[in-house]
Each structure stands twice: as C-alpha cells, then as structure tokens.
Length: 302
Image (tube, rainbow, N blue to C red; front, side, top):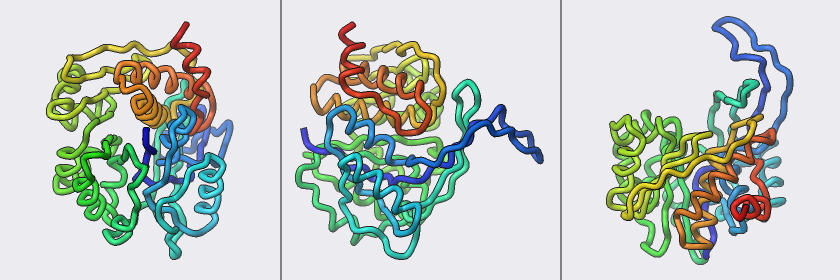
C-alpha cells in the first residue's frame, strides 16, 4: 500500500483539563494536566494503529521537547525522513479541555515551523504511497513557500491528502492554491469547508471540494462525516460514544481514513472505519489515542 509521509511536524501538547474556559482577565480552574505528543504526531499514530507504515517528513528539532517527541516516534515505529534541525527545539500547544470534551488551542511553532527547499528535495519518496499536509504548515512563514512548491510538484504516483486545519482563513492564496490544485483528497471539518468554498451547506461544500479530484470528506464531529466522490455524496453517521477528550479526533479520522483507503481501495469503507476510530479516540484522554485495528473492525462487522 505504500507508507504515509506526514509533512506537518509534531508538537508537545500541554493539556489542561478545565472546569470551564476562563473569562478575560480570570483564571481557569484546572482539574488535570498532561504533557504529551500532539500536532502532526496524531495522524501518524492513527495510521500506524490502522496498520499503515508512516514516516515524518515535517521538521523535528533538537532540545527537550524534540527529544520527547523523537522517543514517541521511535516507540510507534515512525522514521524521520530528514535529519533533525540542530538550532531549535520543537514548538508546543496549550490545550484546554472542557468537561464535555471540547478543546481550545493556543500554540506557537518551533522547529516544525521551519523547512527549506533543499531539505525537502533530499526526501526519498521511494516506498511512499501517500503524503499528508495540513494548513498549519502552510501557515508558518518559514515553511509555507518551500512546502507549497514541493507539494505542488509531487509525482502522480503519490497521493496527497490536504487537511486545511482551523487556520485556513489565514492562509495566503499563493501557498494554498498549488496545494489545492494538487490534492487528491481534502478532509475538512464543516467550518473549514465553508471557508474554502464559501458554501454554508456541508453537502454542497463537500461536492465543491471533491470537484476535479478523487474525493473529499467533511467531518461533522459526533454526527459523522460526508463523503463526496464522483459517485455522489454519502452521509455516514457517527459512532455514538460519551466523549472525554476530543483533542486529536480530527487527526485520528484523517490518519485512519488514509490507512484504510490505502489497504482496501474503498473510500466508503475507509470513511466508516475513520468515523469509528475517531469516535473511540474521544473516549480516552490525550491527543493521540487511536484504537487498535481489531477493535474498529469488530464494531464495523457488528
């Protein structure tokens, strides 16, 4: 099936469980805290859990946070396609998780925000079946130009999935346009799909995003997702759970979808698999909590 190459770098998530988001000038009541890998790590972990090989093409730095992430990557069997940057540590993201599982972010990049054309040119694509990139990488001034050009020039044998991410409205068109033109698949939540298409109806937005490419997904949280291909639009209901932490659920959906599509060649099956995997991930605390493949398959068969 070929491996997944993730072009969005990992970050360290500082996860605070809060009773409620603080009002301006006030302090949140924190009921729990964890320091764990996040960012680009999440989708790779999901792909690995679903049975797909994965490698990091995004930047990894040098320092305490980068060392923790390097260890997490090694534990997952995820190789780094480029040498670590020697002069900066990895970035971090503060995540506030409310009692219903909703999460809010405040982050700032480190090494993952830097990439050069020479570094990208040195990546060996042999054995790579899929490349994934997010709007976060295109948002970083130190990465967007080189990465957009590299993604736009990927060989036809490699399939590209683009995740616009919550910062999509901030992306400059000169970086966004070549990636959208090259992407075989787009996976966006409903708000991101509306930004990209100007359409507030998720089904219409999904159809617009799928036009001219293999397909598109519009993720709708607990309501599942919409799958748009040349065959039409499928409404795939969510798998009911009681969520504890939705941080990383979208990433889990994307990594799971890619892995199952690469394995089966069936977008509908892959979307159903991704819905269940993402739902189960929300029942566990932390951003990278994908379920085992056997667990998902058991629920699909049931």
